[in-house]
Length: 517
Image 1 (cartoon, rainbow, N blue to C red):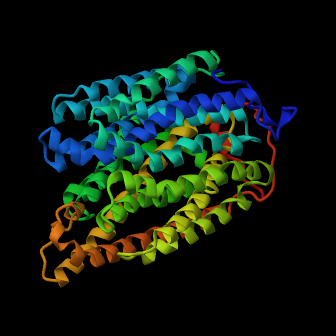
Image 2 (cartoon, rainbow, N blue to C red):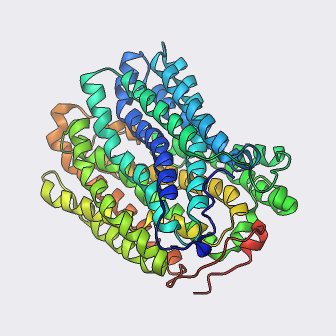
Image 3 (cartoon, one colour):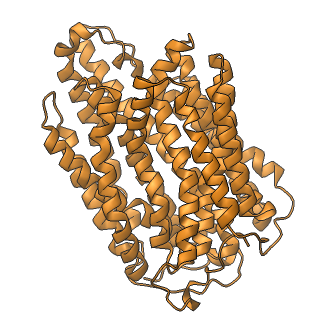
């Protein structure tokens, strides 16, 4: 097997404490994931610069993000089979090499077309890293310590989107766009070296069998269609038109066909959907989806508010987001410990309440709202995120066996990716629709898309800033409501510790259990 054999959890002499091997494994995984998540947010900050320096329109430059996103959607379903067939260590190192190599190619891109192609190479590597990292950590820690172990994984997931814009702003303003990719080289070399050194070799307990080619075509095609449709909805600020609806419908149909295929094929399917018979896994998946909507949608709108209404630069906007990351750092280790001792049912509802308290002030933002007030709100929001997202993911895996883990992590990763994309598209849609209505009421033309933010002349800023602020209020109200919905699946989470030996059983066996709490 490809991690320290500490997954037995209940048989460990100190099940309530992470041993050195688990901590080292977690740090090795974090060293790779931090590069991927930071890179995503850094590139978002640099899109305008890339479009200017590579002589391309902003809509074409958007494919630097979209192409990467589609490549991620293409390989996520493959990661479970690949980990079972080749081993998690080999897949992890191969993904790191592919992502780092793609970063070098992006840095030497000579045109927008070549940059988009190389970003797809990056995505093929990056798409397997999140499910791979979750599998490695979950197997190393076992079900009784998964909360604290997953808190390690939460470091790059929650801090990357906060500090990425800061680093991106520094590189774009004081260096050149090439460095937003070159900065990955030393981190990638370090991550590969640590993985070769510290991740144990070994074979998986069961053979993976033949690749489910039909399932791969159906599920990857469905995810790519859904992600592309959501990306188009975000850039247009609208869910109407066949350019959006057609892709979303195609995605739903393909995913639906995959579900039927998986039910028919059973354990031999790329992902065994019978995992959702496990009520805890199913409720955790729903919660992960809703939290991803609130998290990534909010992370998109917050810097836009600071830049378009308050006229802050990318660097200042990134620094203003830092309190959210500090709040998450404060809450994650505490939340992980409580989750392992008492169950996520005592942690996640409290985290949701903190999230709502931290989001509420942004539903009232104006053109001169106190930065001190917003900083405090972001810190509280970070506390809520730290107490919500990783305990939710940990709970999804807590009743699964090692045999089921590698097929469950791509499912959760795909759900996270879809939730994050939907959150961004939905909040941009609400914002753009409200702003268009306000501009129409003022007798000013609007294109209905998100690009209208950057097209506002500076001379009109003072006049339009209140309208922008009101549109952001509507977007944050949407995030507030979606966050509140997380409370529904959270009520199904266990409220007391339930130890379960990690015996070998099939995903179907794992799915037959219920929380019983």
